[in-house]
Structure formats: C-alpha cells, structure tokens
Amino acid sequence: MTSARTRERLVQRLAASGIRNAAVLERVRNVPRHLFIDEALASRAYEDSALPIGQGQTISQPYIVALMTEALLQEGGRPLDKVLEVGTGCGYQTAILAPLVGKLFTIERIASLQRAARSRLNSLGIGNVRYRHGDGFEGWPGQAPFDAILVAAAPVDVPPALIEQLAPGGRLVIPVGSGAHQVLLRITRGPGGVDREQLGQVTFVPLVEGVDRARR
Ligand code: SAH
Image (cartoon, rainbow, N blue to C red; front, side, top):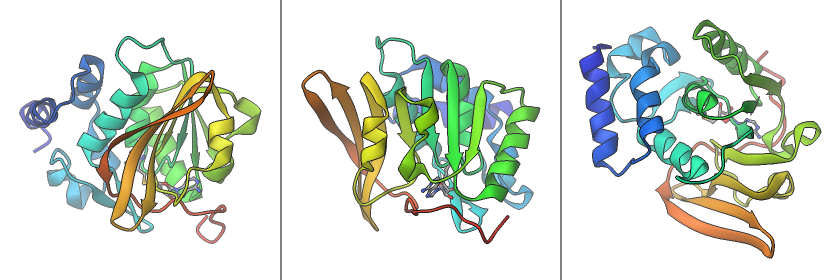
C-alpha cells in the first residue's frame, strides 16, 4: 500500500492532470507521504486527496501541492534562493519544495504540528529549512525579501505584508476567499506593480490570525 507501484500511480495521475515539471513529479515519487499522516490512514497516503492530520487541519491534496510548487518554480524562471512557506502543517509541502530551492523558511501557528513536522523532515535528511512558530499574516520580516512565497491556508484577502516581502520579480502563490469560494492566485511583483493570475478553484483551511497558544 506504500509500495513504489502505488506511488508511481499517483505520479502518473498528477501528470495526466497537467503537472509538467519533471523535478516536481520526481519529488512526489520520492517523498514518503505515508510518513506525514497517522498510521491509521497510511493505506490512503497515495490517493490524490486531502486527509486529516489532527488539530482540525489537513495534509493538502498531492495535485494541489504539485500545482502550487510548479507555479512557484515556473519553468524557465530563475532559481529560487530564498522561499517562504506559510502553514507548515505536517510538513509534506515543505518536503516536496525544500530540495528544489536554496533555503526554505516555514511558519506555522500551531506549535505541536510544527514540532512533529520538524522531526519528520530532519529524519528524512531535509536540512535547508528554518522553522518559526508564528503568524503567517506577518510574514518573516527579518528574512525578507523572498524570491517566492507559498501560502497553504486561505485568507479572505491577500495579507499586505506578504506582498511587501516579495523581492522584485518574486512570486506569491496563495489561495484567497472564504468557505467554498476560494481561488488560487499567483501574484508577481513586477517593476510597474503587481500582476495577478488565477490558477483555479481550490479548498483550503482558513488562514487564522495570531499564534495558537492553547495547544503547545
Ligand atoms: N502544508 C501542509 C498543509 C497545511 S494545512 C501540507 O503539506 O499538507 C494549513 C496549515 O496552515 C495548518 O497547519 C494551519 O495551522 C496553518 N495556519 C493557519 N493559519 C496560519 C497563520 N496565520 N500562520 C501560520 N500558519 C497558519
């Protein structure tokens, strides 16, 4: 159920759904998604669906992780040196993205989720990641600017701090909207202002303001 063949089927499915970036597909092939979820759900790890990870949160659907990573990397674009991720969750998206960029900075508001993600990623040998227990609405001012920012939870509007923390030419991939009405956006910071592209309808958990202090 966690075999190479099962994983390959997922890769083929994502390719058939339009994911073209070979490096992204290779990451989906190599990252053991079953290690990011509860053992009771491991048999479903290579289905193309979101699954619960506790604390009311989910591991994202593989297709969406691949789509966002592809949109961030942009074929032919310059290599991404510094990248910010908001919403570490279980760390699956972090594991897909980290080896494809220089340094990945990741923020999560629920400390226990981030602790578990950090120990998983360390044991997988993924070392170019820095972790922060904080509020993604504020970004990570001390490390800005970023070549790219990926947000894995949906605010109603794009947080201004995230646009401010984009380097010139930088890209922000973010779901925006509430409930069932969310759209995935790619916002590029150009010389004359920001350019917005719509990448499709999506469903993410909400981006919640403030740090979670209750569940440490
Ligand atoms: N990236 C994960 C999916 C995470 S789900 C994956 O690979 O599957 C979204 C995560 O965003 C949750 O863990 C949630 O706690 C976190 N989150 C929500 N609001 C946030 C905020 N303001 N700052 C940081 N993290 C936030």
